[in-house]
Length: 362
Ligand code: SF4
Image 1: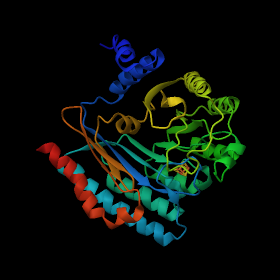
Image 2: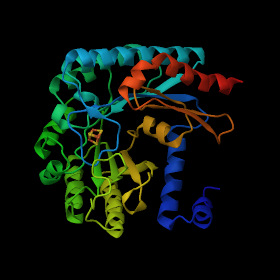
Image 3: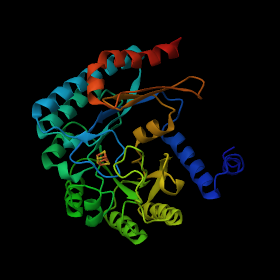
């Protein structure tokens, strides 16, 4: 039973008391927001480009090509991929709840290419029943009022503007070509737009940051009062440029105290935790936790992390996940991270993706 669950997690999975409570609380909240029995599909579109590469980055993203023609060619493949997903939706009568454009940084595309990406998504995938349309506008160095207008006009209702830290010295150290002031400007633009839900991400453990630096960033975010806050703990995978370096001056105890401070900050803004996930190589072996004010939790994040709902991935490095009817198995297809391999094999990859569903029916 729900009352016994935390104790069970402590005894059988050796979870500390606080984490067992948190996990139970999140699980119950998710079931209210998105019952597992409802066959609601999430769609992810991955745009693997960024304006510069952050030193801690382990995402398969490259620097955005400046030539408009190359961006448009890439979008031709994304549209092809979208159309095969539309076929799947209709063939298997799947209802889409949430659409998420991430990456990389989708806003690193030119004004024209970005407008085309958003319009294509709206035309092909914003089907009746979609409740959430999120765009990652993580990097303020490639955000603009024009891009925001396009998003507003095409029905985007959730946006992520991610400072990661509110310290210029750290932004410089991690290779981001924007300042804290640029973040504030972008945040202000979004806040004054018609887009209802704004998420901000922070990372605990960035190179050179002290515990006081992280607390100051959390306090700064609290003053802005976004709708969602995601508190990450630095993860350095092998593909990160600074993997293996002595990257963080924080101890595991510092990190744990800061994760708790993140929770207190979110609570002070009236938010509740609604999803969490862990990765290998995380500082202090902690978790990333998403918080949301009432009525603003991201359904896509729940679908993607909990693996109880179908998620269809479009674009390089995207993942398609098809939970099986027994509730304990998952069929999965990862699109290649390399753009050339993705574009050169798209028809075969789309066919493999459709087989995940065909098997399910057998
Ligand atoms: S913005 Fe994100 S995806 Fe892009 S380089 Fe930085 S960490 Fe990687």
